[in-house]
Image 1 (tube, rainbow, N blue to C red):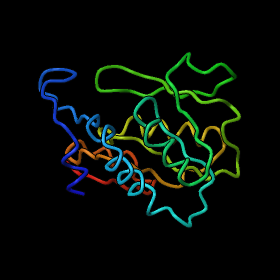
Image 2: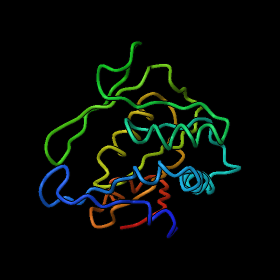
Image 3: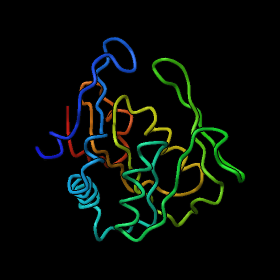
Image 4: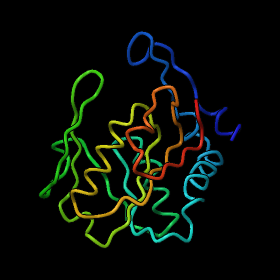
Length: 171
């Protein structure tokens, strides 16, 4: 995991003063390291009864779609409002600086689906929890959540205590 860790760049004071942003751009720029990240994300779930992979806009699309492709499964995009052209289901959630919403097509999953949720980062857990709620609101089951980076000090895992969590790197 040191190889992955070395490809995560710290950007101080972004998006605001006092925040240290974990930039994955160097990781996705390096094909061999990106492949390592994707294979490490999916490894614990090989042989499991997963029927779809979901990822949150925007960086969750990078890792989620690659994991779905490797597993030969459909990818479900969880989008910001107004981005999907068909009928949608949505969930609202609170952020530390306001509120946000995620949407998915109403036919994205069904009651037989067991979904692996993928994102680049688990911070406070708000977006991940809302994503789980959206998948469940659509009638499917969240099999597990997987993240490239987990910021342990923000305790986002607490919001996801009802779900299995797999994180590659802990800061």
